[in-house]
Image (cartoon, rainbow, N blue to C red; front, side, top):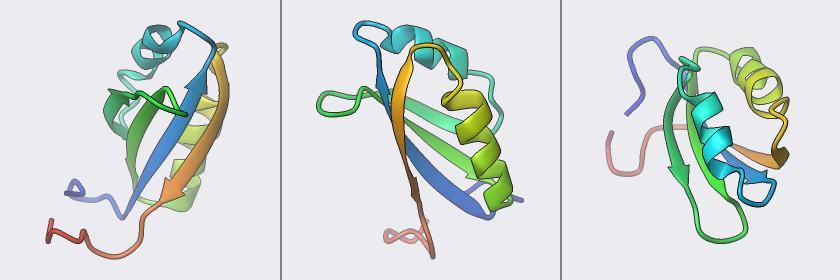
Length: 88
């Protein structure tokens, strides 16, 4: 469910340097647009949920708060559109 005042929701898949997942997740706590952070098993190490009012705000979070972290190797950003399939 998108919080009041937010128009966009994005998911950012993150690859970290080996063993640095917890440092990356800790560095992202407190970024107000990041509403959830999960560790993953598989190709990516971490996924974050971003809620923002504009695409520029999403880009700000990805480029300035996620990709600039020292232990982030690469990212993939998925922007949602429309309403949630489950009605949220």
